[in-house]
Length: 142
Image (cartoon, rainbow, N blue to C red):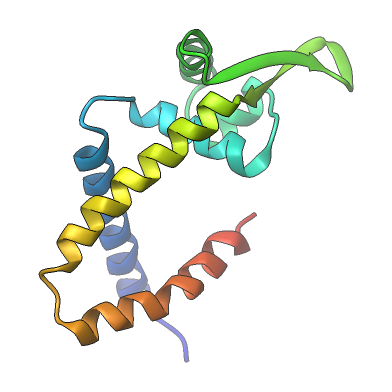
């Protein structure tokens, strides 16, 4: 079975809207969305250069630099010399950064749990059955 472009577009729009609304509801100004994206990227991919962060987030290199500086000043990331090129540095997620990211995810999960209460039990079951498929789709792009 294949999905049409219109159906794929509607799925993308719905996923974006859900993700944005969960982030807004859960973070409520505690951390900028670009910062969340950088933390999540470093958690997933490991130590990365600024250029890689800019490419993967995606954002401009100056935006990635500003985000890293903010995260660094908060103790959520740190720099280390790149073992392949000692002149360059890589950005690493600190334990505090990993904990902050986990707290954000828990906050989003709490918001989602409250919203799920508005659905019927069979709708909730369908959504939980879809999660492994969404994870596979997300990982297919890596």
